[in-house]
Length: 286
Image 1 (tube, rainbow, N blue to C red):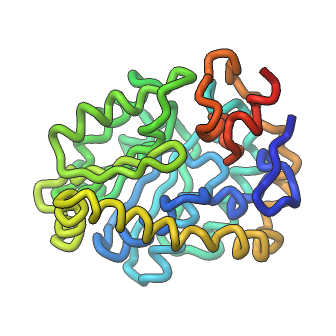
Image 2 (cartoon, rainbow, N blue to C red):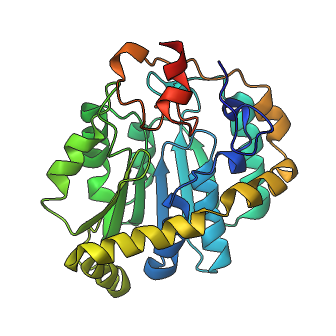
């Protein structure tokens, strides 16, 4: 069963990247981080169709801060997200980025290979969104930790998912005991860690403000959610301009490895990534 894009025009599994922008506060908060932290180097581990990475590139351009943005992915998928034939996606998304964003690039390789291309203490903002087992994400954090600068901030995606072999939540529970942090609980969840010893003062102030009072945390989340609420209209109006749309539409949908019988939270977002609640997506099959 194909789930539909929020725009209603095509299956989400065949969306161009801008149609796959999360309809939650991830992207507005990413823009806020770029504005406050002004990272010199941003690295995203796990690009897939490029929604958040292209957003990071756009933020760097909008604020004219000269950030080097690097997205790392094999573009083959994995056992949790599903497997795809990513040749066309990599070529077209890479061409789109190269034509529009300076100092932004894709590396089609494994995380372990890519890490050798970065100097120690050189990365200011790291987004980890690869394989989501506890072992995999813990290894990613440990492997890339020496590359983090004194100003570094780390984003961990899917901290709320506790089914289908996901274990980011376990690592998050460990790390938030060690670092200043903030967390979004929407959909799959997003964790924000102030890992550097000298994170930008504005980011430090934001984390302190959000954690001083639960009402402050709610306000930050709601502001980001409000900013994201307009994505549906803006994305559906501009997605046709994306040159990779045709190429991505030709890619077979990811083969889901979801076991419906093991996912009993029917009102939570479906782990297939459709954006629908489980009961309205793969839950219909159970």
